[in-house]
Amino acid sequence: MEKFLYAVMFFLVSHDVYGFPLFPLTGWAHINTRSHRSMVNLGIGRAVGQFLNDYNYLEDSVHWMLAVDVFFGNDSDGKEKYYASGEEIYSFLEKQEPLKEAYIHCNGEQILEAHTFLVSLRQQMKEIVKEPDYSTSLLRENVGKSLYTIQAFYSTTNWVEMDRNKTYREFGVPGKTLSEVAAGDVDTCSDCDNSGDNKNSCINNLLVTDVLTSGYHSEQDAVSPQRSSKDTKGKCGFGGSSDTNNGETTASGGINKDRDYQTYSPHYQLHLKAYFAAVEATFQFLIDPESLTTLVLRTENGLEMISALSNLTVSGGGDYPECSMSGLRKCIEECQNHSTVFVFTDATSKDYPEYDDVIAIALSKNITVDFMLTGGCCRRKRNTYRQKRQTLSSVYDLIATATGGNIYRIDASQITTVLQEATEERFPSATAIIDVLSMNTSHSNNFQFVADSYVKNIKIVIAGTSNTSDVDLSNTSGSLIANGEATVLSEIPDKVVITAVVS
Image (cartoon, rainbow, N blue to C red):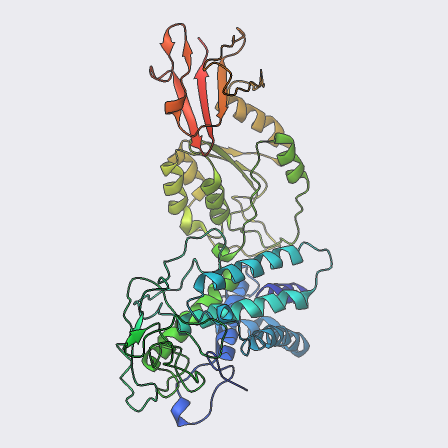
């Protein structure tokens, strides 16, 4: 069990110049100032505590702050190794703080660059764990680097000033659309007192409320657009004593929220709000399936797909419930409209409260979901886990019913036979490529082909156009498209797919 918890930690993974302090600060002026170390400790503690409770590694559910102590009990060596893994993650975070690249700190309006950086780190982690004897230290290094940039975002940008009482869930996650960042010619701040003598002078210095921005730090590599010496506004500065040339090309003052201390942080009054948002984002990064990189194979070559499926490997397990709703939602997002999705599982759903989101997106795309449920999927497996009672009788039944799908409760040995029957019901005709035709400017605009009497359905793929207005499918009685006898399956860039019933 110890070894398994260490594996979880692999994934969870005294100069204070550019961001939140690395360590707690001393003195009355900093009594309410929070640090990166606190964020890491809280984020990992919450994530591990939730894991231990959700997967029933504790005799009884306990508060996350007690979960690690309860789990290890008298095993002091195991607990020491657990905390050492967290310390290693923090040591890599610490090394990011002195770096001059503004995107690492989300400064200089390099928010998109920071997002790209985080996406690349996630992809590297995916590649690392593919190796049979992967380096846990290298994995923890990427976690530490990621957490530094994620936490810095909430102090250096105007996210919390925009009254965002939530984490930026899209930030650093592949395939997500980000909020707009202020253009280079847009003034984002007005001058305020950088010295901190008037502690409230910078509270209202932000000029933008509907786009993201972040402060330019004069010691980092992002250079602010020059402003006229007569201007009283410009790009926001980072602010504070470390921003030595503040006000020369930026508006004086700044927007950082690194400390609850006005001389260093112009937006000190939002320090705790930024801190709690950063803690939540740390926790979400460690446990939220939405934060994980999804590898999707898109191909029209069936052999390529079969080969990819054959190369899949399964490891771990033993905890029974799975995040099936998250996986199903991602699958539906990738599918074309009017598709049928087959779900094979022998486990109950860990994230079952999200079933209504799955139904909503499936219905919006007219997608049918069939379930092949095997093993102990809807039954209690004794002696291997303590399953919490699912509050819904079966989210799989609900989804199948809502989307017009079926539930097949079968043994694993029956999958091939049942799947064949199900596909024959869903797709009653076999598919064969009859011919491939090409045309160029020297050809006429029409092609004719003869359908064999045994063919019941024809699927036609026209490459070179994205709109059915450029295509017409006709038989002797006229246009099948206009008469509603043909169905347009998809109109995607450079390709139209049409199907028709042969009469």
